[in-house]
Image 1 (cartoon, rainbow, N blue to C red):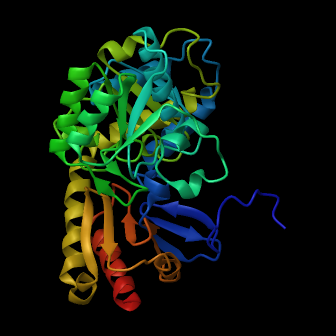
Image 2 (image 1 turned 90 degrees about the horizontal axis):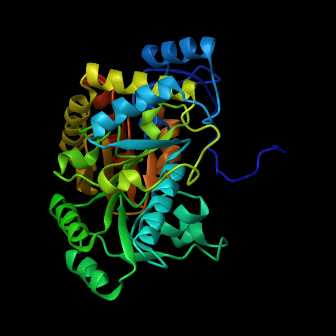
Length: 388
């Protein structure tokens, strides 16, 4: 019996190594990685720039406490805030921790404005993490069940409904912020419209709320812009990100600008491991590589190629209700539940994910080329054809 807690329904495969968009199991079989460790390995596996950065930093210094200045952390903060158009950032170890930092920032922002019980608006279909506060902000009763009482202070709103948000503003004077994903990943790869996001920005400005965007999954080039909001003409007050930022090493970030950037002070928040030299060196290599190799543009082009290839297969296309998402964050919604496609894909040497029951989620590495993108798309089309 395994000594691990049984918190995952693991698939029957163990990977020994990877290269680019491919993983290899302990029997030597090759798999095309269509999920990148759930949007983490944006540069693929064993990317030479990240490997070199980790090796070089590990030779010098892996960890020091945040009680002291960390030069590479300061370098990463300058680069990341520059890319994001933010003023400063806090580093943690994960997306959930980045969202926790944003939630704490919003609550303190409210208290500093004299609001006794600050509330944050979140959306139906949202997923923000599995810590107690981020779980409470999430809209999934299945993963919340058994962990009550949940954290209070969240007001749920329907997706893409400006009037509902305005009604909340009228009825809830304690609201201090809106937290949302530009594209809901776990919720079924559901993009918010640019018009809605721009309306949310306007409402936040009118009400004095913070607009906080959870770009844990959509950030770091995944959608064709470094951050998804940059392709939607919206500048938030807070951005959270993680996943692809470290290409596999654990790092998350909560970035802020304007008034939000001055809310947290010494002693308000902290992290033992957050932003240590090793992970920051890896993240710097990731950001540099995304820029130098034009991987945002590649994500847009390869995402479109995957869409076109899927829809060119008449039999598969007949069972596709729609393809949602942007860049290399794609949700292929079928006309029936399709969870069994994950195991079928594994058998076929293809790693995919199914979310919301009926949606095949694809999150391949940003470094994927035309041949590999076609291989992924034709493989998924074959799975759909055989399943249907």
